[in-house]
Amino acid sequence: MKKRLIFPLIISIALAACSSNEFEIKETDVPQNVIAAFRAKYPAAQVIKWKAEKEGGKFYFEAEIKDGTEEKEIHITADGLSVEDD
Image (cartoon, rainbow, N blue to C red; front, side, top):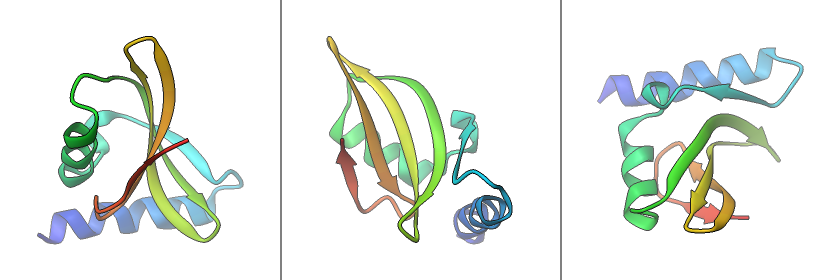
């Protein structure tokens, strides 16, 4: 349980320290609840890359995906409760 809360906190601190509000991360660094939420909504999608991002004062994970012939950016909150596409 603590592990799930610590990683988003570390990412948030890193984003606050960086001049950019987003950076690329490995899938192994994405919390399992975020991956599970993503896979529940897009089970057949191929992830091109993962990013951690802070926008408008909110922190989320972004997956650049290919779903069939369509490419999208998916935003997932750190708690995994909200999954939205652009």
